[in-house]
Image (cartoon, rainbow, N blue to C red; front, side):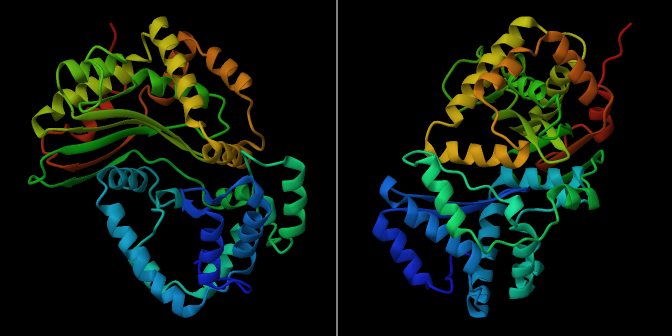
Amino acid sequence: MIFKGTDKRSFRDLEKEIEDMGGHLNAYTSREQTTYYVKVLGGDVPKALDILSDILQNSTFEERLINRERGVILREMEDVEAQNEEVIFDHLHATAFQYTPLGRTILGPAENIQKITKKDIQDYISTHYAAHRMVISASGAVKHEDVVEQVKNMFTKLSVNPITTTQLVEKEPAIFTGSEVRMRDDDAPLAQFAVAFNGASWTDPDSIALMVIQAMLGSWNKTAGGGKHMGSQLAQLVGISELAESMMAFNTNYKDAGLFGVYAVAKPDCLDDLAFAIMQEISKLCYRVNDDDVIRAQNQLKSSLLLHIDGTSPTAEDIGRQLITYGRRIPFAELFARIDAVNAATIKRVANRFVFDQDIAIAASGPVKLLPDYNWFRRRTYMLRY
């Protein structure tokens, strides 16, 4: 609705202005942040900032357009539901953080979309789009002082609602619950599942070590180039024995919680062996860690972090996200020093904190009859040593 017209620009004017500049205006929402971004030539930066300030402060939210947009969002919901990976991670959050806001999907239930009103939207904006909760970041052909001056002059009507993100989170904290959800469909060709542990928040001191652990567990895809002997121990196990079509470790951070684990897609008759390989490699980190694996993971992590900000859009996004989550942008020299400080002993300690005898959350769909039950997984969060 933000793009559907303001007090001084109609929907058509807004589109025409962006088109005439050869620019690109868009937005996306994650579980904790919403980003509005515009990409233009260097000379059009003041105009782009004017458009952003206008849509974020003066949008009209016409009732007839809200009603038309409902159908668009419902179609978007159908598109999301067709993406298996998205669906699994939505279910994983719903079961892991049940009865807390982090368990809700980004789009929400269809009945909410049907009945949301102009007042609901305006109340949300006045609560969440307050000046102290917003970051305006820019990268590329921009001059810092000019952007600061323009923002000072343009963003003058933002909400001054004093409530902070921390206060909202304290009211309804994210609480991890060991649980599972399975959507069995024996007619589907492939099964997919995610096994997750309670992870680290953005500012947790062990969040960097968990990033290294994620790189140590690695990922593997049948369709990607490269041999079966490349990558992590887990990737090799999966690749050589052809246990899965694809597999990836994930590590997601939030304001007060996190999710860390492995997601995999496999044929139904491989599920038992695949689950064993995943749990063995995860729990092994509590007992036995190879220095070479740690060094490889550190190098992979550093190169992937650098490759991730290859361009002006990801750089601006990275600046904004870090300022919101950390209150500052962490220089790469500092980040790399923190990654290099992780050694085999750190990995063992962090694995013992997050993995050893800890509850897990599981989401699975497809022909999952042969996927071991919850207690089987829970029992393999540790090894019995004699």
